[in-house]
Image 1 (cartoon, rainbow, N blue to C red):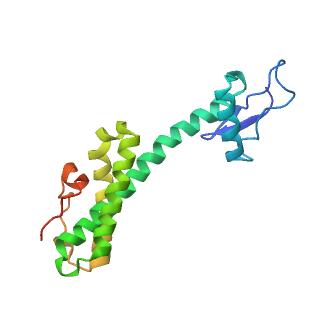
Image 2 (cartoon, rainbow, N blue to C red; image 1 turned 180 degrees about the vertical axis):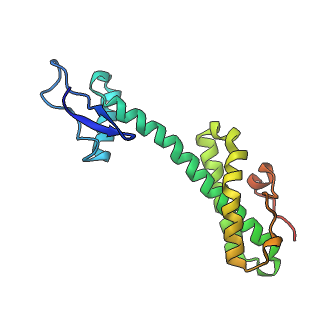
Amino acid sequence: MGVTTMIRGQAMPRPQPTARDDARAPYPAYDDDLVGWAAANAALLRAGRLSQVDALHLAEELEDLGKSERRSLTSHLCNLTLHLLKWQFQPGLRGPSWRLSVNNARAAAAEILEDSPSLRPALPALIDKAYPLARRNALAETGLPEATFPQDCPYAIDQLLDDSYWPSS
């Protein structure tokens, strides 16, 4: 094949046009123009020109998309638990910005779960991943003693995602 590209640290052959294809690949190189590459490959898929699709990179991008959704959901869960901790343990400082942060994080998490319902079973693991950072950030932002905040997330999944749930102090 000749031309190679790196995928996950491994040299892989870059798909080359066949004799019946144009003299060059019908899309910009993956490494040179990701947006152009993606648009061209999407058009090839829609046109049914599967032999011209850069399948190796497409598979990698699809896997990365799933990882990106997981990272985004974890980030929103971290922000959500951080602000619920502050809400619960600093009742005298509650204000509109904390309420807005909680509402925004809940809405973003709900949108991701609506778009990717297969992430719902992963919620316990994602919360377990998000909570230590939320706790560490709560400690840094509040200056409260470490013993103030539970070691494990004190909120059930249903509470985290329930727009009407607000922990009491």
